Image (cartoon, rainbow, N blue to C red; front, top):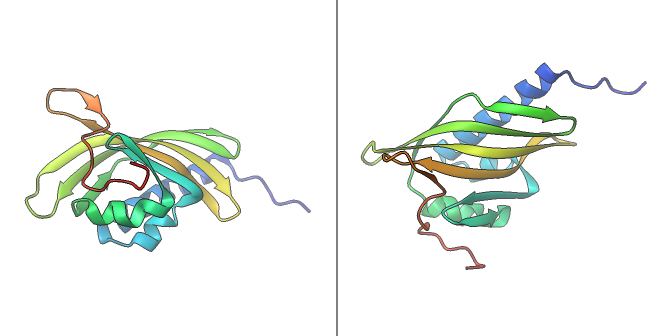
Length: 143
């Protein structure tokens, strides 16, 4: 007997739990947990570059530390893939300065459940501009 196809509600709950794991693991500095929310070919885009999963440990090590507060993602399901947008407020632990913006994501259902395939950060500036940010302290190997 074939397995039942999950309902849209079950898929949305699974994706929202995945995104909660992203926020909690990056806040706690749990790189292994953070990497686990992505597909093996997953990427993160910000600061004018796209970073493969293999560069996440160095990218996160170079980034400020603090609290990642994420809102409920708006997700568009399409079978075994999906796309979505999730609001973010990051609070730096050293001075409590805040950065705000949103993630634009794609998701893929895998044998291990839903995973992020791509995540791209857009910052919202005080002047109202939306952009991918200034170059990061970490420079990827391809730069």
